[in-house]
Image 1 (spheres, one colour):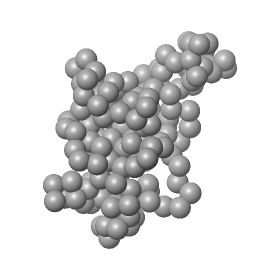
Image 2 (cartoon, helix red, strand yellow):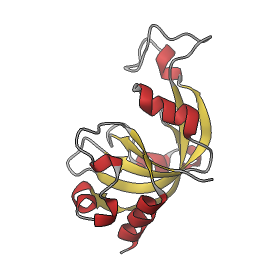
Image 3 (spheres, one colour):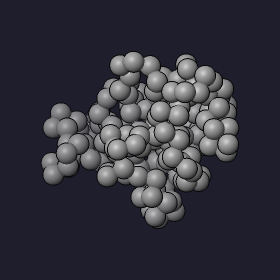
Image 4 (cartoon, one colour):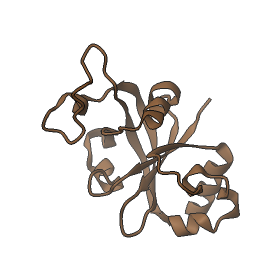
Amino acid sequence: MTQFWLMKSEPDEASIDHLAAAPGQTLPWTGVRNYQARNFMRDAMRVGDGVLFYHSSCAEPGVAGLAEVARAAYPDATQFDPASPWFDAESTLAQPRWVHVDVKLVRKTRLLSLREMRQAPALSTMLLLKPGNRLSITPVTPTEWQAVLALLDA
């Protein structure tokens, strides 16, 4: 059964345009260093799951495109690279602590702003919109997914 996710990325690091320009329009979702977000990737995400590609920590945050999980979780190589900001000295090749998935572009969309999402009653239950939620990856219900698609196509 297909599941749906919202995945946040800072556009300076990995934007929807970076994804569109990447070889095969596919990027590894590296650098996640939150255990709950890691567990979503490791334990719940499957190839073919839908992704709302969300630009965060920018002038106008919002959904910038649609993607899908293209490869199931595998060790994030940035945890082993001392030059990486995502280096984790306690992670080992034998027991990697951090994983990532690959995401593939489905389509770039107009920006569905956070403000517009907050105004949509159908999205009132969305985890992204709950006070205090700062997770970079959150599940999206099928109803929320359809509501976002309807807003994007409106």
